[in-house]
Amino acid sequence: VRIGGMSYRIDINKPQGSRITDMVLLRTGEKIDPAKTYVVAGWASVNENTEGPQIWDVVENYIRKQGSISVQSNNHVKVVNS
Image (cartoon, rainbow, N blue to C red; front, side):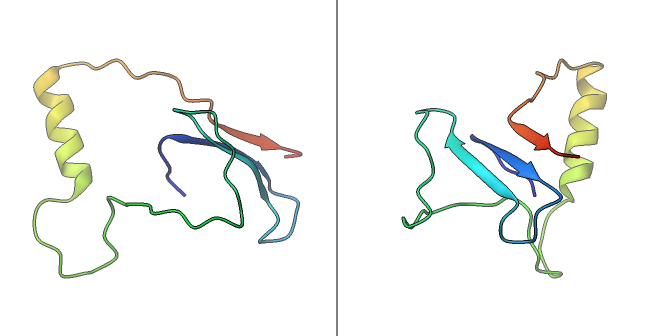
């Protein structure tokens, strides 16, 4: 799962539905409330008939034009008990 703006812990040894804990919004530090409804957005379409270039092509072209890029490390997902 790709996410942005959040951190969480995942225990791959737990059963599905119980693996992800400690979800937090990075901007505010607010914990995600499982009883609350949230609005989310995604960038990857599951529709086969989408228009426009594949995201991978867009990223590749950007990197080629830049020559090199700097990527910040991302430690927002913590895998435990692996």
